[in-house]
Image 1 (cartoon, rainbow, N blue to C red):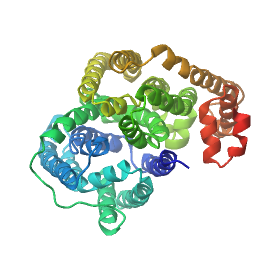
Image 2: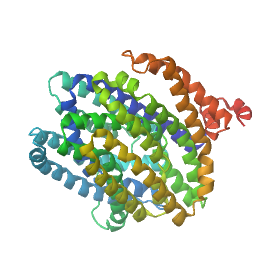
Image 3: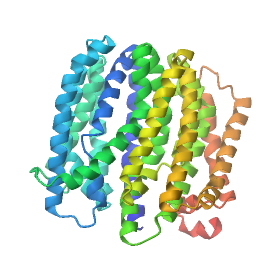
Image 4: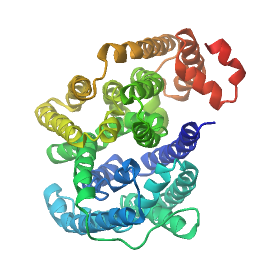
Length: 483
């Protein structure tokens, strides 16, 4: 197995394992806490998530991309991260009282204080994780992330049962970071650095500011509704929209995150080797969209039984939001790796401008749409999706000579496979009531029917993803048939 394939396998195991643990946590919490309690924490976590995009200042991506890496550069990256992250940790503590007054929720003060602690710990973890990623050593990453996620889940549930309400969610996040740092400090396989260097930080900061702003704008698009609805509406409305968006983002992220950590090292190494990056980008996009698009299309059609199964019928109002937001994420997945390509080619500034444009657009659309209800807010995300595809396609064509016709022709089989899976789900709904109180029946029918339909569709269009599935499953002898 090649170095990249091995990295994808271990990265996938780590990311999917974390996602499964996160899903179990979400399902349990949705039943142990009320929508109002979850909405209260969501407001705080949305604000902190935006600030957290700056705490690493792109140091990890810088270390992965850098051609010549020395110990001094590593310690300078750590020094910059410590300065920024610790400063932001103090800012989070100070924001707490202002946020509590702004939203009229006094408990936000303590929630913000707890959420600030990881800012002081993550610099030492982030550098280690970046170095492991650069060397494609995702096996070690797997150990640290899965164990810390399990400990976090157990701690969160124990805190809830002890009566800590929404504070339990913040304490659970803190437990995960502390556990991961302890593992990194104790296990010899992790190349940890404790002594930062605070001089000649300009080069890293110049790269990091664009990387951080990009991540800020990109992730703010997903938390912006929580902040706007939290001010203009109620905490229950925040929880409903957050649950709908959070679920489809969970699905999309689960499918993409196994590959995503490997993409930047892969493209960076390809650039150092003088390979054609747009061709590599197209291949990566075709492979991931063949997985993501069909799953999101099925989730869009079967949103009601899926929401009921995972979270209970008290969250039914999130189902129609989920249907629309799943389509938005299908559109967004089309250029999911665009930022990795722009970083690998030194186009960080364009990447940041692009994400800022999308953020400003959705902010205006959400404010305008909210008086018409949560469904209207979900609908405007479709406008954002089409705008993002248009802007990114033009950007990659003009700066990196992406062949538009070649790119979208390569994606055509993915579109047809997605349509087949969506129509199959509609057909299932004709025989199994998607409104049945026993949500496991329609979901069970989908789980039984859709995987074979998807695999047959891959074979029908001779999709390259099928060959990769055979390789990972150890069925190389079937590759001749797949061709």
